[in-house]
Image (cartoon, rainbow, N blue to C red; front, side, top):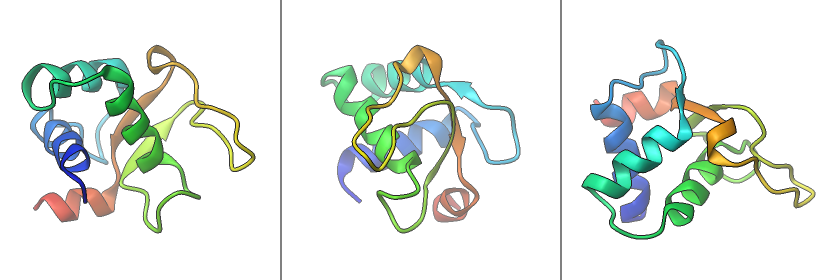
Length: 96
């Protein structure tokens, strides 16, 4: 995993955004990552979250997303204020 992936997963773990709890807004997680761990653009962090939530991008989805995260045909994901995320079960095991 690249550093931005690790920072997103760590921030979600610190927030308690586990697979068996309620979803949280993507903008909340992006703001937390930018503010504490990755002081770069918000869309770089959100694109990373989107990619980890797409079933066709990675072998195992590390983020469980609710909302429009794009399609394999090239449709882009919805804005971060419209999507919600939480850690996938496999990512929770990765963080343990």
